[in-house]
Length: 95
Image (cartoon, rainbow, N blue to C red; front, side, top):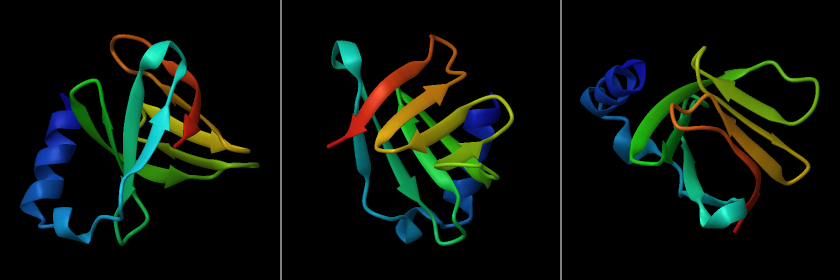
């Protein structure tokens, strides 16, 4: 529900046109997801039919984004998308 509210707020704010090109992450077992970044530095993740707005978080290494329930973390070319209702995506690599 939070993801849908964040997505609606993002669309209403007119931020969709201010998003970066999509970065596509390929994961084991044939799954993939996309990440775009807005001008404020937030990440918009599209995965398994969900669009989720994540804010940048402090990370000792790599880049980490979260909304408190879902987290996208990239480190040394490998990404994890954790907290999805139907399970995490781990060991993903950008195309």
